[in-house]
Image (cartoon, rainbow, N blue to C red; front, side, top):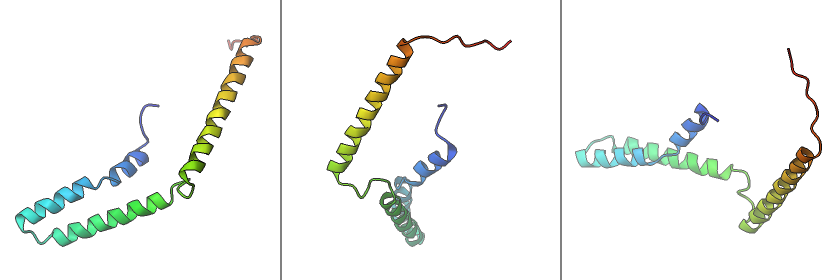
Length: 99
């Protein structure tokens, strides 16, 4: 894995509120009229973050349900790893080499 796909980097970048807060503070220091525009951008960004959170898988599950699901998935991984080790230790098949 060389790095995150560009779309994921863009989504992570879009979640950052600090640049907007910084711009608002700068506008307030300068007594700029752009404060209202920057506040509207911040409000929009917060609303987008709320929507992303509400659309996350498992958000409707309780912490206990999430812990139970995690334990089940870990057990499945452990079982699959054991099976892989078992199959690896059985016998090696001769794989013909391409010439």
